[in-house]
Figure 1 (cartoon, rainbow over the protein chains, first blue to last red):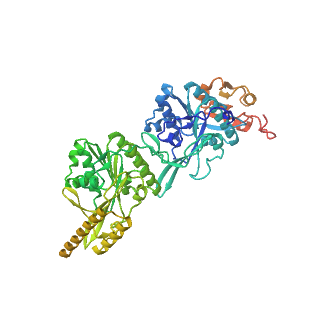
Figure 2: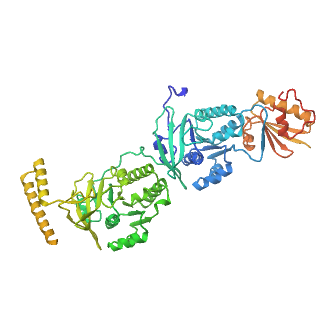
Length: 534
Length: 101
C-alpha cells in the first residue's frame, strides 16, 4: 500500500498459534488484512477463533464476525478447544458480531442497498472492545446472502479498508471448492486482502493431510511451501514446521551408556547424551533387546526413560524384558520408566507427533526409545512419514534427550528400509543388526556403521542373546558381504593377500605390519578350528 | 390490522431518503395509513443494528402482522416491497412502470 511507501517496515504480530509464527517469520503482518482460504473442513474457523483466543490470552481483545455459523453454534463448537467465547464476551475481551443468516426470516430485495450496517457493527464492536485482532468468517457466506455480487464485492473492499484504517490486524476466511485451484470461490476474495494464506485438507492414499501455505505477504517475508498441520482437541491448530526448524541444538560431549558394556566399547565409550541413534535390522535380530538395554542403562544411571512401542503389547514387552533379566515393572514403579504401547493406525502421523511431543514435555525423560519407527511407515504417505521423522528427530535433539529409534529392514538378509533412507542423515549414530548365514547356521552380527564425532569399532561382531541379554562375541573374520546380505567365506590365503595389498597401498608402518602378522596367525588358527569342527 | 414497521438506514443520504419516500407512498396507498413506522439511523445507533442483526441498509423489518419479514434496498421495486410486506395491492397493478420510484 502506498501509505507504507516511505513509512516504517511492515511489523509482524505474533499470533500465538503454535509454530505458525515460525513459518510466518514472526506472525501476521500487523495492521493488515490477511485472507485465509480453504475447502470445507480445512480448519478455517478453528484457525480464525484461535487467532483471537491467542490474542485474548496475551491481553489483546478481539472481534469475531460470523457470516456462516450462528454465534450460538460457534460458542458451543469452540468449547471443545477450551475456548469459552461467552466468558470472554462477558469480560469484554471479545465482541461477536453475528451476521449469519436467520433461516426463519424471509428476506426480499427491493432496489439498491449497501452493507453500511455491517460496517457500522464491526466498527462499533472494535471500538467497544478495544480490539487489536478481528476475524471475519467467512466471506463466501456474505456473497450467498445477497443476489447482487458486485455490491457485496464493493462493500467487502470498503470493510477491508475500514479495518486497516482502524489499525487492527484482521483475518478473513474464504471458501474454495478445490484444494488445488482458484484461491477462492468468488474469484475476488484474494484482492480484498493484503495477504493470502491457504489451508488444504487433501486426501492422499486414503489419508487426510492438512497443510497451510502462505501464498503472499505484501511487503514482508515468510517461509514458502506447504507445511503440515494438525488440529488437536484442546489446542487447536498446530503447525509442523520443517524448514522452519533450525539446526541449533547443542551438542554434548558427555557419554552415556547404551546399557551394554560391549556395545559402549564399540561406540568408543558410550553414546553421546543428546544424540539420536538408529538401530536397524531384520525381525528377530535384537532390536527390541537393544531398546530394553538402552532403557535399563538409563534407569541405572537414574535417568527417566520413555519407551514408545508400536509393535508389541505391554505384556509382551515386559515379559521379554524379564527374559533378558530386566525388570520393567520395578523401573516403572520407581517412576523412572514409562512405557506406552499403541497401534500405529490409532492416530495420524501429525497427531502422533503432537502426542509424543506432549508426553515428552510432560514426563521430561532423558531417554526416549521408539520401537519401531518403520511400524509408523504404513500410517501415512511417504511424504508425511518423512516429515514426521524429521520433526521428531529435531524435537528430540532440541530437548537434549538421548533418542534411540529402531527400524525394521524388509529383507531378512542385508537390505535397508525406507525409514533409514529418511533418517540416516539425521541420526548421529547407526547400529546395524544383521543375520549372518555361516555353514548352515544362522548367526547374528552387530556393527556400528556411523558414530558422529567419535571413533568406533568398525568390525562386525557376533551377537548372541541369553538370559542376561545381549552378549557380543568375536568379530566375524574370513567373511565378506555380510552387510549386503550375501556373506561369502573367504579363504585365509585370499584374505592375507587382500590385507597385504591394502597395507602396501596405505603404507602401513612396520609395527602395524607386525600386528597384521598377528592377525594372520589368528586367522590361521581359526581356520584349523573350523577344519576340526567339520 | 396495524402494520408495525422498522426502517434501518445509514445516515440521511439519497438512498435513505428514497427508501423513506417509497415506503411512505406505498403505506399510504395500500395500507390506508394503518401502520406505525420507526426509522432508525444505524450510524447513530450501531447497537440497534447489532440487536436486530442488520447487514444491509436500508433494511425494512415488518414486525407485525406475522410472519416477520425483511425487505432490503431502497424499496424502489414496488412488487417486491408488496411481497415483502405480504400485502395484496388494492389498486390494480401498474404494468406500465413497476419499478418507478
